[in-house]
Every structure is written in C-alpha cells, then in structure tokens.
Image (cartoon, rainbow, N blue to C red; front, side):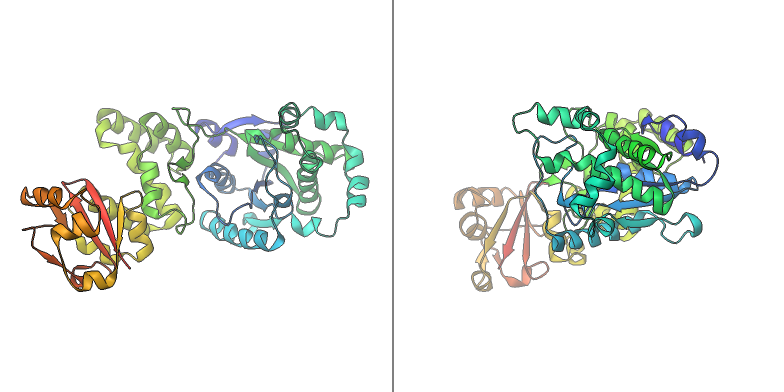
Amino acid sequence: MNFVEELRWRGMLHDIMPGTEELLNKGMVSGYIGFDPTADSLHVGSLAQIMTLIHFQRAGHKPFALVGGATGMVGDPSGKSQERNLLSEDVLQHNLAGIQKQLEKFLDFNAGVNSAQMVNNYDWFKEFTFLNFIREVGKHITVNYMMAKDSVKSRISGDTGMSFTEFTYQLVQGYDFYYLWKHQQCVLQMGGSDQWGNIVTGTELIRRKDAGEAYALTTQLIKKSDGTKFGKSEGGNIWLDPEKTSPYKFYQFWLNTSDEDAKIYVRIFTLFDKETIEALETEHTAAPHLRTLQKALAKDITIRTHGESEYGKAIKSSEFLFGNTGIEFLDELNEAEVLGLFEGVPNFKIALNKLSEGINAVDLLGGKTAVFPSKGEAKKMIQGGGVAINKNKIGASEDIYNTSNLIGAKFLVVQKGKKNYFLIIVE
C-alpha cells in the first residue's frame, strides 16, 4: 500500500514537502501527529488525523501520536481568534489518559517494528528552563521568520492581538519535531492544513540546529457542504467518549449526513477500498432514498469507535424511535443510555410518591406534567385514540398509572401520534 496515493484517492491530501513521497516509498518511516489535550476525549474533528495515522501504519510505517501535555498549557493560535485557557497539570494528566485509551481502539500498539507509540511532550519540556530554551532553540529561528506565518499575522492584525505565550507556540511545536527527530528517528510530521506553518518551523529548526532533513505532510480540513462546521450538532461537539456522546447519537450524526457530504466522508472516515466505495456510490445513486452511503459510513465508524454491541444498540434505538421495536428494548439500556436516546425530547419530572398513589391518564398528562397544555386537551386526544404510554395505547381517560408501569424503575414513555415522544422521569 502506497500511503500518499491512499491519501490522494481518498481526497485527504493537501500539502506535501518535496521528497516526502520518495522517502516513504523507500521503506518504513516514523512519523507523528499531535493531538490537543484540552479535553479528556477526542471528538469527530480529530478522526481525520486518526485516519491518517491508521493509513500510515497500514502502509508499513511507524505512527507516533503526540499528546501535548506541555503545549496544552500554552495553546495553539492556528485558526483561532482568541487565546486558549491554560490547563493545570492534574487536568492535563486526566485528559491524556482518556485520549490514550481512545487511540488504542484505532491504532495497533503491538504490531512489532511498526507498532504505534504514544509520546507526551511534557516529558521533555518539564525540566527545560526558559533560559536553556531560548539558548538552544530561540537563537535558530528569527522573529522575521515567525512573523511571516499566517497564524501569527492574522492574530496580530486582529482586535485581540497575541500574547508572547502564544507567539512562542510555533517554537515549542518545532522543538517537539526536533526532539522526536533526534531521539525517535521521526522524520515526518503530519497534521491538518492549518498546521503547515508550525510543521515547517520544525523542519527548519532541524535543518538549522543539526543540519538534518525532515519532511511535512498535511491533510484537508474537513468542511460541510452547507458551510456549517463539521463535527458539531445542535448539542455541541460529537465526542468519541460514549459518556459524552451516546453511541446512538454518534451513529445518528453520521446517518444524517447529506448525500454530498457522505460521498466525501465515506472516503475519509472508513477503511473501505476504492472498489467497495464505488459500488456503494452506484447503489446509492440508483436509490438515494435508501441512504446506502450514509448507512455504510455510520456502521463502519460506529463499530470501530464503539464496537459491534453498541452499534447493535444504536440500530435498535433507531428502530424503537422510528419503527416497531417494543418497549422492552429499553430494559436493555442503563439510565444514561435511556436519557441519551431521548436527548432533545421534551421531558417532565414527577415525584415517586405521587405516582405510587396511582394517577389517571388525564391528570398525569395534563395536570402533573405538561405533555398536554390542559386536562381537556389530554382527554380529547386520549378519546381520539392518539396517545400511548410505553407503546401501549391509552384505552380510557380514567386508566390508572403507577410505579408498576415504570421502565427501568424510573421512566414512562409517552407518544402523541407515532413520532412525537415525551419522557416522564420519576424521582
């Protein structure tokens, strides 16, 4: 497998330094990508870089994942309009542990000579004094060179300006590359296209400090066809951590991709080969309403991120909300998963002791909760046969509900018609 060709046909390649492809074709190369440790989970915005490392390893090269324990204390100005919050060492260590656990799902850390390896730049910066840094690193890169970077120019000309802390970031990242080049024979740094300036600073530092050779490669930044930011939903970031974004919501994020974006994402985020993708595209074009591309994309990335079992739950969750799966499915879910399934659905709370006494349907839906704006409206809809609790149609306004009706000892699921859900939470 040719790594650069793989990125090219998948539409991932952006910039590549002359000589990089020739070097990669000669034999195993060690290369790295840096990951931001400002949270204890990566999100789908990080997946393009994770996929780059996966392809790199599959092509027979050795991937390094650098987590920025030191740079996380500073903040990268690239593509940002304001300074990032600085993190304490305790928070960073917690975040690094979470990120490592996630990366182990995607990369092979036991593959022999080209095993993936995690490194933390705090390990080589923690004893590096300021005076030693400006003596050993700062003297090799001119201020003119640093000022010429787009990430610096855009911030300096903006309203907020740039602190000295952020200005030095490219030197810190450049030294990361130098350190890995010198101690791990890492000759290639990869990243998103917004990182080109910082990566090239590293190659320049290696050349000026030790007369060494190093290389750079960047990938396309992921965009959505409608102009909105990739990786976000109405609820915020789509995280890889199932505690932050449920596997069901994660699956739905990919399933709801537009046709135009699905054609791009299926190349970037799956491991399907070219023939498989082209066959999926043909099938999708013949019957777009079946959403063949979206289903294949969502299945592949959900299984690789969360596993077969969680993918199965995501499918059942979709069938529950939009199909004929029975209420008993909810008993397979824990409380967090139930709440995740009904995220965004109107919910109401009721005291356990009130429900224990038994409440008739009209009082429950039009009095104790506001599923209906009034008891009269509740009664009218119930008599019309359009209301169900726990997937069972309410037979009469006087029907009594109590704790024996609860799902998971905590929930009642109300439906108005087929698609309008409401969740009653008993506390």
